[in-house]
Length: 191
Image (tube, rainbow, N blue to C red; front, top):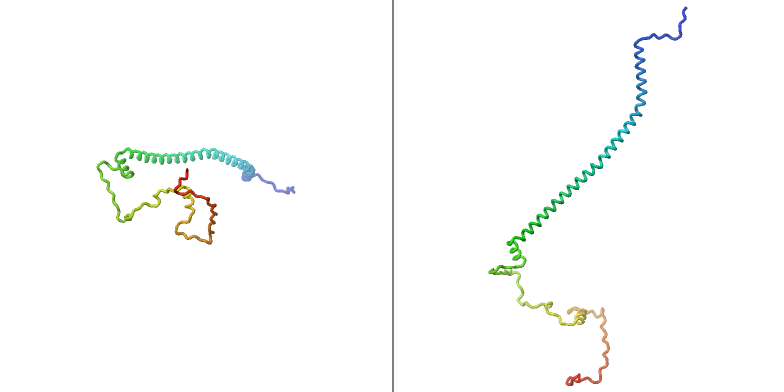
């Protein structure tokens, strides 16, 4: 008998060669896909870093641009407001150049009348003065000396009762002894 090998022989088939080639390509692709994530991760990080640098490089000038535009808008608004104020003041100045306005203001504020005009004063009957118009106490000049005014200001006002219990009565100083001879009114003092 013939000797038979323990394992069966493989017969080369074209379909098997295709399968083997596909498996080898898949293994190679798997090997590459495992290496690609590391390379892709580094590329993504570099890409993000570049984008952030570009954004930062653009952000500062862009912020300055918008701040400058806001400042220009505020300045234009202030210029408009000041221009309106200037126009109002120029109108006021122009009013004072007009003779009719000056006459009107002189009549209204100062009571000036033109020559030949008659002044009329209308008295409201509801505002009648009392029949006995007298000079008030404040209008009478004070002829007292300043010490008299000071002492009079310390006296209680007329009609106010004095509280004897609250304030003790002032003690009068003793009078000095009278001189022995008094000059008479008929004799001159200087002789």
